[in-house]
Amino acid sequence: MLARYSLFWRLAALLLGVCLLIAWGTWYWSNLLQQNGSLLSRDARQQLHAYAAQAEQAWSSGGREGVERWLGQMAEREPDSWLAVTSRDMHSLGTRDLTPKDFERIRMLRSPDGLMSVRAKGLLYLNVPFPREPGSGQLLIQLPKRFVPEGFGRASQLLIHGLAPGVLALLLCVLIYRQLVAPLNHLRERADAWRADRLDTRVSPAFSRRRDELGELGRAFDHMAERLQHTVSHQRQLLRDLSHELRTPLSRLRVAGECATDLEALRQRLEREVQGMQQLVDDTLELVWLDTERPQPELEEIDVPALWGVLGENACFESGWSAQRLRCELPADCRVRGHLNGLAQALENILRNAIRHSPAGGWVRLGGERVGSHWHLHLEDQGGGVEPQQLETIFRPFTRLSAARPGGEGYGLGLAIARGAVRMQGGELWAENGQDGLRLNLRLASV
Image 1 (cartoon, rainbow, N blue to C red):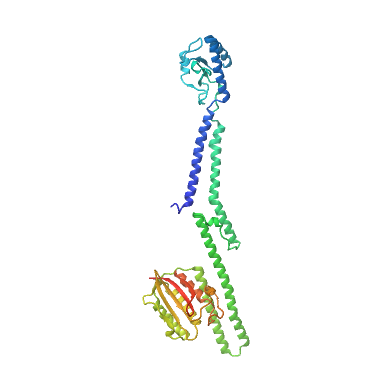
Image 2 (image 1 turned 90 degrees about the vertical axis):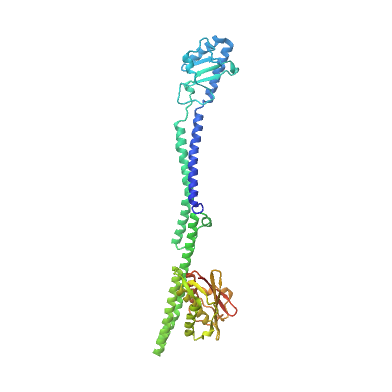
């Protein structure tokens, strides 16, 4: 599933990562700002420690009376705050003892360097030890209102809970855009190039190498583009070749009509040329159908030696050859899985081509052997073969070799149709030079 839906997992990991980042960032920065907002400022701490130093000085120089005088001065300086100077065991160092109400106040004391509760403004009490001799006493003071920290304010809340998640969400959108929309825009640009008749357009190599669904889409796009380009180019070439092939018989008919003196000869010429043009059009349409439709016919068991016997009988009737010149060296159990009409047409075209290019007194031989789950059939003639660089060219439509092989009739469509018919049933057809002539090989699935 990970390999099949890699884009899903990539987007899921991206979304999960950003969500976790938002949750963790909000929690972490909220706590950090809340803690920083609950601490006294540096000036407030310095002022409180300065008060403790003054209280220690009053105690050292004047004893209880000195502490009492200093508390009186502090009452004028900090009229809204309660103050007391005590020993470490909470005994008053002034002339007045602490009352039960005072003890109630100092039940929860905080250090100036610790966190302050921003919810209890005006009710915070701090103990500040004497700076020089901390064990000798301490200052107890109600935190003045001007020193109360602001805490986690609205601006900080807006930043942490609003702006920061919004920025991370925007980052997530950018990442998703790069993962999805940018590749789709790339495909749209390629599709627009198709619309502009630039059929050689393909997706970028970086896109087609992606190992996810978008990479599969890019490779399918390239395959479709290649198929479309091949089909359009093939059809255009067929139209050019067909128009060229039709000009020749039409020109002969025009000349024959202008110079005709014998009506019977003209009728025979007309019949022969029309029959040739009809065959040319039929073969061209069949080739186009095989190339564009690529049908998937139902396959059946085919006895190849029996099929060869029927084809050989028809070929002997058409060409005047004797049956001994068409040799079948196939094993009796040679049975393949294919389409009967398609295989018959392919073998018939190959056989006619071999007979047409064979010399006088030549022979055509069909042999084969079973290789694994396939039958390898080969049909060989004595026509002298073709140049190695032309072994693939002969399967192109309207291809005629020069004088390398005898027999120049036909339109050059037979082998192209044969290859299309063989491929239609899952086989393969290729050519090579044999000992005496051209050797055409067929690879078909065995029964």
